Image (cartoon, rainbow over all chains, first blue to last red):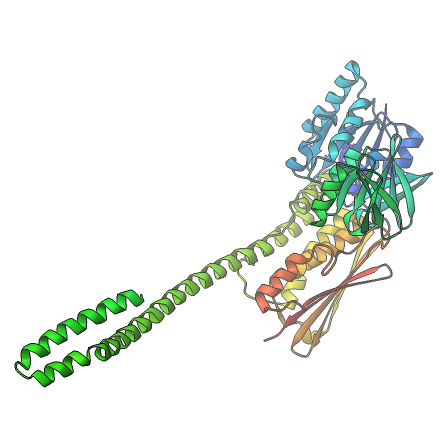
Length: 246
Length: 271
């Protein structure tokens, strides 16, 4: 079975390597220093299990997982405190709080082995990602994949979001990017202070709105600084009035 | 209050009318004069009593105000101390646990280095605990303490982290609040290491200006993915707040970002 280690501290990886020596079935196919290397390595090797640190350069462990279509089983290795990680407890195979003992490590690997017998553990990782927005790790950026490149969009750069089938189109001054998430997800992570959902299919940055015009019966259009016209629904209008203090 | 004063004045008038009547018994002219001057005497009485009432009211209010102000000042001092204490206490548990994890790794492969790191970590923690009070420390002491921290981080991040520290000899004994540089350097490392993937150089240099010690900390960052927040940027608000509480100034911490370098400049007034 193939294993990939993703941690930006070489010494932290060496602990896992040492502990894995008593698991001859598990072969380390690659070690990665950051999430970018991680995405590539997972695409290349399709590992069965990854050991993943959370705080890493450029993109963190969660953001890296979001970029992978079929995420493998994950055991988190992190120095984050228990509260921060609690939200993912049920969906990750396990999480190891650094520094962890060999016994604790073996328990986590054994747990994964046992789960493999019963169910397809990869499903867990999907659920895990759905849970992440509830965590205290507040999003200040959104990571998207455009072709083979990874683009990090600071939340401050987002002008508005529009639903697009199963995707959400993120509009910035540099162009628009698709992300495989729901509008409800973005409504949760973006924070009420800066954004308002004016329509089932639209979330707008409050500061970008220059004017609200009536449009047809019972609906309105929000005109943005960029000139973009965003439909405002019947239920969105009172919300918009409230955040604008009208 | 006017009512109260009027009643008092009438009472006084009644009493002294009766007194005067009983002293000067049989003089109809005087009795008439006494009768005619009743309103004037009433008003004089009212004025005197009213004035006294006013003075005492003002006096008591002032006493009250003094008391409240004193309490407010005490509360503020307490809050300030607590806040300063908290601002200094921002040692990241993250740092501690990751360092311990590195030690775990070293024990197996390079026990000598593990031992060395334990000593560095102990010295660093001891230094942190020792700086319990707000007494200023010399630049030399603060930089030595910082060096311990940087050495530990270097073990953790290996070849990725390098540091440059420079200062003029004249500044060595200049004073600064304890643990002031720590969060600034921590920030620089955090953004340097987590915002780029290459080798990161953190530079720290100190110089003496007129009545001021100026320390500059620089780190690389990626302007495409990180936006320094308005004002201080990069979560340095704690440092800024602390400087404000200590020196009553808000212009002592400055940050600038140019090309790929983020610069934090802190000035410490020398008294």
